[in-house]
Figure 1 (cartoon, rainbow, N blue to C red):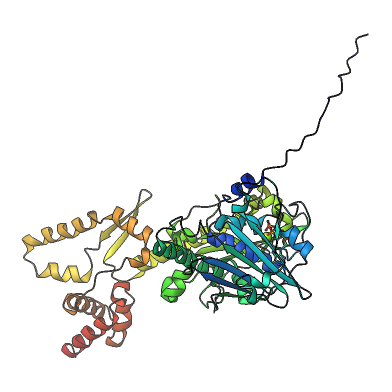
Figure 2: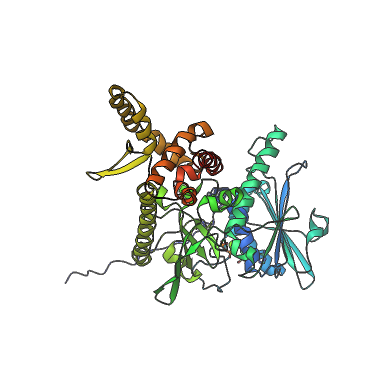
Length: 500
Ligand SMILES: Nc1ncnc2c1ncn2[C@@H]1O[C@H](COP(=O)(O)OP(=O)(O)OP(=O)(O)O)[C@@H](O)[C@H]1O
Ligand SMILES: [Mg+2]
């Protein structure tokens, strides 16, 4: 009988350790920017139980640097050597609930994305240790030997090291200085601009810690304490919060809270701009995903809904535990995630309901503004599923003017009004409202222009039995007149004097 047994494979093992220089250079391009890199290093400080993190950034010295100082647990020398190792921990390891890390890479990959020289000084039980990766030292070498520095006292910024804690120092900031080292002024402004963006980002992603509810953290940039930016404006009295929804998935719980932000007129310009972020409110609506209270996704509906003008005040906070990291495909930068299928299914329903309610409220408001005002200047007309805005030729001011015209001119006057309606610049309006809706305002109206309108409306209302005392309220119910309140009252007083 034929023997089917295959011969055993002959296997030899050779050393294929990655070349340190090429691998580390590759780690520089994980897609970090200054804000995500700093956030990754601060994650480590929070995990180490720090009560403060001080960022010291110097863009003007001959050797610009950034130092990140914390008063966390610090490390022993053995722990420091492990911390400096690429892939020091396995993503599959189970982490403590308060641990914001996952890959054992963040410290190194975040740092190398911004600088070529990473030094870490740390102190635990009064013993200081210091280690350094200098990429320029690697250029000619292929091994992984880490530099340990026995006299860190001579390193600039050493004096910032607290009794227990850690300083991460970035030097040779080639990326951050925009590779324009010949032009010093440009380099400085490049780095300063990046710091301004980073400051806003850190105030946002760590806002729950800075608010002091989740282990309190104080964060400083060059000795200035940074205030939190709460994207849900949850302490604002006009913010609406729907009851929380809990999704139980295996042993984990995902918490979902829907917030409707206050209308921009109810906030200060600064508050509104801050929570709108660099891209504005239209782009900032959507999901805010928190992993152990640290924000990792800031807005966007991840395919669950469209970002529309009618839903731009809608934000949904989603809280996930770090035990679900692999399902959410959390990336090294902690700046992206994907919805696990089960969560997507349940969250879709919550979002559809929430977004639908918001749209109806808005549309309803639109109807009130136009339809319930006693004398709209524009009528909103629904026909064949489309919406048309048409000047209201029955408005008292138009009626009374028309009545003063010779009969042969009246038809021409109404035609002019209808032409204004059909010439409404819908596309331009849409583009402007989508881009920066708060900047689109009604034209100013002079007292002279208002007068015929106020007089005509007051007369019509009086003939319908509205007493003089009720005229102000009745007129100010009209949004157009309400926005010219002072002038309307002035003109009405004149009307009262003339019609005693
Ligand atoms: N400021 C710090 N204080 C104390 N220990 C630290 C500090 N920074 C880093 N470490 C230690 O170094 C280890 C490696 O940090 P690193 O950021 O590279 O990976 P990680 O935090 O474990 O995971 P991730 O890649 O997801 O950030 C940490 O797990 C922690 O034990
Ligand atoms: Mg980390």
